[in-house]
Image 1 (cartoon, rainbow, N blue to C red):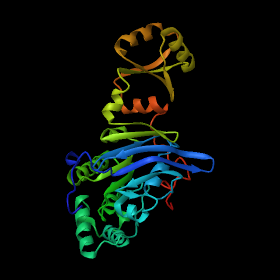
Image 2: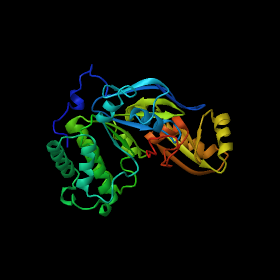
Image 3: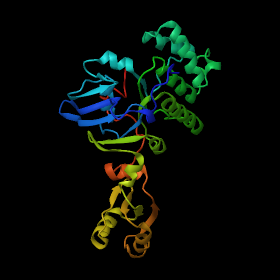
Image 4: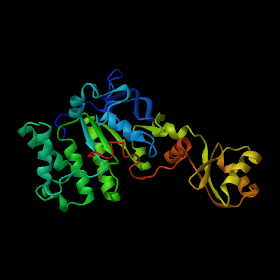
Length: 336
């Protein structure tokens, strides 16, 4: 889809400017401070995951990065352009695939892409080439003249990916790119995302509630209560917990929490309906808990740390797709 390959992630020079640079960025809605002075950078050619529970401020942050909201403080640059002073340049440099479908179902795939190319001022000859490249890349060329209303969910999602790349953006924002797709369509979508990064060095900034997708990111930022509370590679984030994770569901989690602290000297965390313990050697501790814990254990598991464990450890909540969190976040309602 991109006519000329960009520098791959492995070829990135150390001094190369960040694809996204955020410094002390904040946003207020009246007395509510939704984003509290966050700072981070995204490298060119990186797949960057942005995770957080609903209400954490990530939608508001993304809205500022895509020029849909004006920051209350701090600054941010996307593709080298300031999101406040150079809005038009930022918009030209980015592609956005929203979680909610935004295609015209009455038009064909071909017409949807031509409309996008015209809106972005892509010259006719170049647009024709990119449209064909894009539709072939997402395996929709043979059905290009059909109304989009006849497409499956996976086909519509692939078409949106092709449309978002017609103007060859430098940074692609993906909001839950595979939500609602069947496993086969999810696999095909991720294969395409990986090809975009590997072949063209496209920078991808994405949100997801699927931990297997988060595992595929180069780095992950976890946001909670308006602040970025962790930022590292998936492997480093999991290693930060150390040891093993024991999950317990008991007849009375409150009493079990107190007993673990007082009798065993262990600090457990209550998340959803179970207790989680981060310990160095779960294989030795677990038999003792099964023998000696006075509160009846209903369910128990012992695992190596996962990204979900990291998320729960940091936020106290499990990652779930709970729907839009804040109607004021323009990223989720563009009409949103």
